[in-house]
Length: 434
Image (cartoon, rainbow, N blue to C red; front, side, top):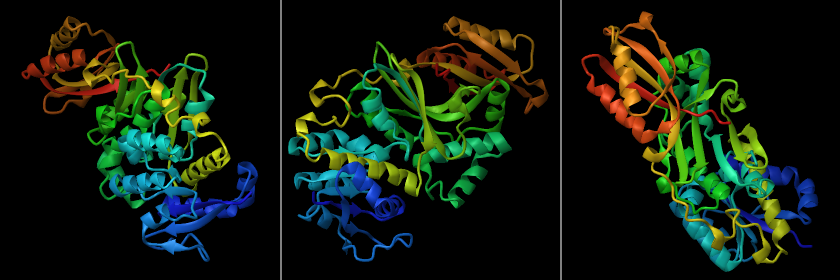
């Protein structure tokens, strides 16, 4: 059979890795795909010194690739929302299949893109959009297709995980580690997407849609970052037997779907609590399989390229398949997606870690316990640090049982109203992940 011709848009880190993997493993990939794959054109802004593209046609116009009649598959690796969306929609309009690593594009515009792809009978593949080289989308969409997914939780941003790992292991401050992450290339000059959870929320939105069969709804994801975490909280969590991770959590409940990204205390003996550095991990709980953990490199030149090329192989295998019988983009048939609502964060349930800076006076603990009890909040464990007095206040650390967020918010407001004995309250969520 004739080779399938692909156009790569973007020759940065992932684009360069994709080109190199396709070139280096061409024979093996052809054996798996059933026919050869040829890079027929590359759209780039600047040369990548790690790639030898001698002999490959190049252009500075990504839309030239989308309109090239010789190209069967467009690989979108330019990132962002606007140009990438226009490029992908034009490629689809021209009857071309698309492979992308762009989580922001899929999370925000995926519903529109998949509807257009279905109309035109083409595939949009996006394994590389979540967790780099970990094939977690395929695992949920196909490997766990016999399961009712109950929940999933993931460390899906390597930058945040690197920062929290360094804070715990070396006692470093957030700002100090962030500067190193930027110097190492793990974090951008503007690190907002990583440290405030936006990147993770993009990825969680995609995973939740595939797990629960719901439309993509990024605008309803609750997002909280790690920039306000202190070394003290990391150390207190450790003393209580927990690790703090920046976690994305999606959980099915009778009332709706929880969709939230935030710093989370996880018992230190859980495998996912021991995922450190820039590595990623996603834990998925299904009614038949139980809990499974997918671990690996969540970013990087060739790990992400691995997922891009795997998607490309799937597209090539499917080129002779009836479009109506292909694996659906979001795992469920488009007309079978559920309208299960996304819960507001106030309706979500979790256990909580509270660090209360309070005066070391008789009766203060009783006041705190009373405020929690009046709102139906039970205390699981408590720890006081009298030796760490600051401005006349000592930290009182509590871990609660599971309650609704609205209850804990009411309790925190009541605690902060005791401004004669309480200075501040820090809240983090706790997940047992069992």
